[in-house]
Image (cartoon, rainbow, N blue to C red; front, side):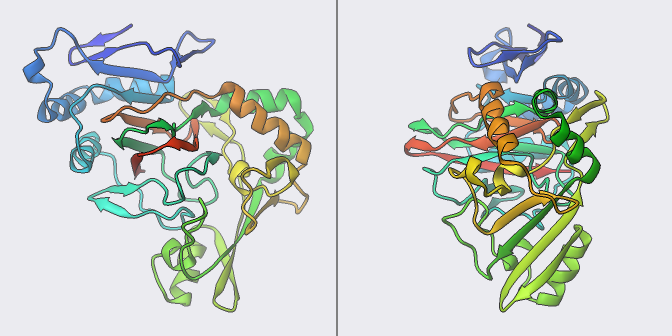
Amino acid sequence: MATVKFFREVELPQQKPQDDGVVFPAVLSPNHTTDSTAVQLPNFKEAIRAHKPWLESLLQKSGAILFRGFPVASPTDFNDVVEAFGYPEAFYVGGRASRIKVVGRVYTANEAPPEKGIPFHHEMAYVRDFPTKLFFFCDEEPGKGGETPIVLSHIIYKRMTEKHPEFVSQLEEHGLTYTKVSNEEDDPSSFTGSGWKSTYKTDDKTVAEERASKLGAKIEWIGNSAKIITGPLAAVRVDEESRRKTWFNSIAVSYSGPANKRFCDVDTIVELGNGDPVPDDAVEDYLKILEEECVAIPWKKGDVLLVNNLMVLHGRRPLLKPPRRVLASLCK
């Protein structure tokens, strides 16, 4: 495993080796040869800035980096770490999760009850302007459960192409259209429960329509509720660095057919861009493949997870024993 001055790559039992010899995700801890007094937050931030090209190269190879054992003790510390990377903030306009600002660029990840799982997804794959990088921070370590499982999207594309070549061909040709009915106010019981006022950061219907349009969506009003129609949007994208196709869509959080009864959101519909339905058997196999290929590393207090949103899908396992507090920051 590699060592770069301040950082040392370590192995965890949950990691998965890939065909190219890369492990997923990469896990970094402070270098043992570093004086313990040097492993403080200012030194960590300085090391991020000094080794950013190497960290970005590692992120591109692995898809995600878990930083474990570093002195990140609070949401403010986490905000400092995010800012040390220097990525522009991706503002959560058009997002469907109910989230609360904590400090600076840091928000709660999702206000839905923690005992509810969240299906795998690429962040904001249902809008034109999506974040390219995601940061997660474990502020309170879960008692049991509550992992944030991740999976490499190009592997999902490959396996779905082998299992359902015709469906994947239709996805690539037509893309997907997402339709969601959003009430005025947030519904904290749902993982896609953001009301249209929170979604578009306004209580003015005209402004909401304008902001939706910029994100490739249109709104049809049903009284004071908004029927938000987005697409067709690409459901398969190409990672420019690796030239690999990725399964970049929100089928698992939007499909409400029999295969997805455990997670379906009755206010959301997803269909092929030509209006054809998404086949239930394909979704059933897709959900199984996700579980087979994913990695779920139990959170530890102070963990920071950096995810390449173009390469990796993420979700949330149900919390079996509280507490749990995982915060997030989105970057362009």
